[in-house]
Length: 124
Image (cartoon, rainbow, N blue to C red):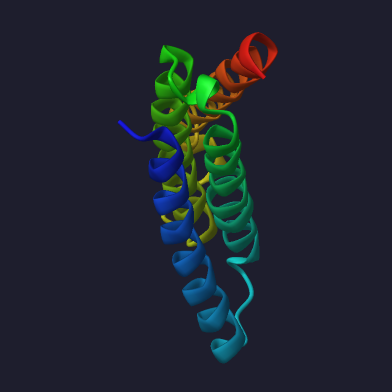
């Protein structure tokens, strides 16, 4: 598995999604999905691209099981979290419907970032 490439490819997919959503909001004048737009761009595009670049610049980090854990934890957590946020903002669920899935998704992202931090500490 090429961790660097995987992070960057998925980061670009999030970028395209974020731009399309931004264009929709601008064209329709409905900015109610702005929090989702921000999360797609920051959690998806920005973080995943930065992680991919770090793994490309420091190959010793990319060769670890921490890197693989980081990728899968961040990917799963961010997808679940963004789906839940989308459902909340479009009225398909209420805030009462967020637990336990949304907090679990947040925990997955946190564990992924903790894996990254530990990897930086050990290998950077």
